[in-house]
Image 1 (tube, rainbow, N blue to C red):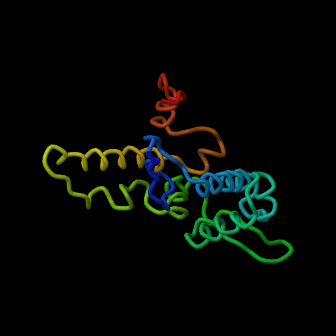
Image 2: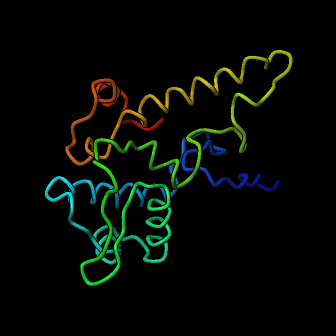
Length: 175
């Protein structure tokens, strides 16, 4: 019997066949670059870093990194300048950019179901309330990703609710 193929998804976080949540490489690499830029901005908000430096520091494939940085610039998260003193920097303060902002800029909505918004789905019969579970899941994901900012990541200090989740027994255990 042939193993079923996972449907393609362009989302940063989505449900895979094995039931785990998945963060795309695009989002992971983007967050690495943004963490670097957030840390740099705490030292000098005007300082810029080159694509090459970001690629090297975080082992990001150069073309992939360029595409990620372009998407973040288009979304207004990054500012860029060409030339000898050029490079990228955050377009606004790190405490005003959430992880959710970055994910949406790179991969679209935080949570969808088979490429559709959970509130647009209709279920019949005994499954009538399944859509409510997907909406609640989206709300839970938002409650973390919209609260955590790049400044939080740079400092390692997270909002209370997020810190509480990190400290829960089993939080660090995969299941």
